[in-house]
Length: 379
Image (cartoon, rainbow, N blue to C red; front, side):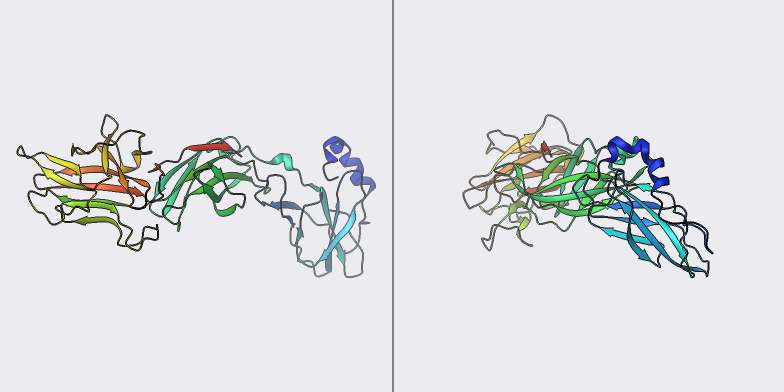
């Protein structure tokens, strides 16, 4: 019913003139500058309510304001509310059109304010892309800024949503929650649980509150990481020459504090890898524990740990690989529960007796996602 205006907007002026309820005159002036803002719900075209606002009038003869509305241009206006505030919140799906009158202390009602039409065609275009970067207990999102760039005067904000994600089924959950809003085309979703996947989507909101369609969906899984970790060559110092990405001490399948990024004795058989130095003084990352293998990431140095995205689908070797500054390495490890898990290393410095590295580890079993999530189908 409320969309009947699609065919009859050209009759709006005539309808307003024949259906005015206020009579004009009296001691006060008609309300001015009526505007509206709808409240986004997460479902485009279905706001949860509308907020009407108009200029405040300090005239001592003013008694109240009356709000009128109608659901279509073929209906008559009806009294919606009476208020002493220069605003009114209409809960639920808004009517199509609203106007406001003022009443003075003698009970005389003014002519109406301007009419506002709650026009969902004012919604902005949706963000066309959505990318993610996996962080420690967080996910950084960025998306195309086309909604702002193509209509900067009408853009208001972006809204970021998330839901559960089933990696095995490649499906997002059906219950979506608002993560937050931002005016920039980027957002960090924090306070997340490492190893637990989430789906994300972004919408653009106009100045009137209209929400766009959603961006493409993106799934991501936070994982622990650390920067600038020193690991010694075992031949120089056994203590601190071995590394294990994760050891589930309480067998709950979760990466708890003190169980990730373990730098320990290089002679321990519990290491995922140790740093070994050959007779020529070259340092190697060498797998140790049964079920652990390593593969060089790419054929050139990587700019950052976050440049290592998915664990490659290859046979991971048991032989050591030379530690080269700026290069990335991916490890496949046995989680001890029958499932493989993947870790990433970027070497930042190689010395004579030690090296410095950054590392990340995906605690979600079988999940090769180390940094960037793969795109899902659009909503």
